[in-house]
Image (cartoon, rainbow, N blue to C red; front, side, top):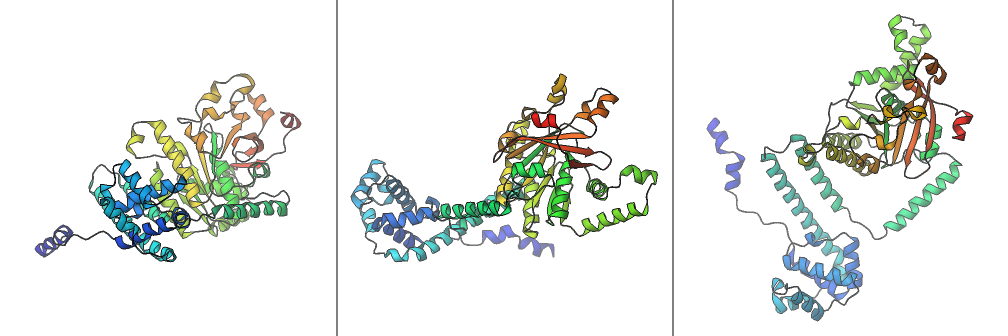
Length: 473
């Protein structure tokens, strides 16, 4: 039996096969090139808007001519056989297309521009098939190499396929009209809502007004020092989206096990604290609220992944899979950025480079999936080193390890609780449960403070009416 299996290994089967020619349509390529020469304004503009590049052409001579044709078209120069021949000669490429005879042969092809769509469709199909073959070859080489991490390999394979899928989508020269229509629709919605936010609400009205809601493709970074309540604020927002907006949401927890997050969610939702449970001070009303919270979450679209030290490539792959299975996914939360990893070779040599890759990867994922991503981030010790009234106050420059976070984020909120930095019990009692989320960056709107109140027992942030002196500031 073992001999039979050995004799039918893939390697030996492959070695007996004849080499397979790459998918190609040289006659149709020549026809398309001739159409460009016949009607440059119409055909070349179509080619550009349809996303054609030199890789669409399999024959090297056709690639050369496409590059020259496009260059002359963009510079409003004539595309006649004499001018093109001179350009080829000047660049030392005339012989590469068969000399003057080869150029004359291409220009003499009788081809109707009415056949553009049909010829383009076939050429594109051959191009995509070649892309799939080359992607498969690349994955074959990476899979054999022992230097490639498996999660990086899987992400690379998925990205290759997605890139081919994107290139299969025909672009259009009328995208501006669509953008204008979308912008008009958004403006009409804002007028109809009369002050209501355009995106998804977070449960914090002041924040919603400032950012106009959470919108597709945005990266929202909430940063703070340890023990400020970052995780609680993220969970409060995700709770609102899952239970009030009735949307599926995905949380990646790099720090806490999923069961701890669920416990926090239940405390906050039910209004029953952990100390109440420990002390046994439960009434029938408490039990009823807990059961109601459990039932709400069981029927929600909340998904939690608690993979420790997850890599950006693994997170990306999991997020894509979840969004594919749950197209209505409203948002992704990540707790927290500095606990993630990137396994590229460049990232291994520099922590700053690694954080930059993770930050850029999260922003790219938000745009790719067209959903908002809320990511928590740790601040350095800058707030502790400040003195006087500014002690503990965070700044964007306190973001740890990379300025790329500040660059990639659409919004940055800096969370601060004065009680944490109080010098004594009297001062702590004076500031009470007051907290503040300083919106330090807002790419599409104003910045400013969002006053909050933090109930530590319930791990819940609630909106707070700002005091008069806060408004003056």
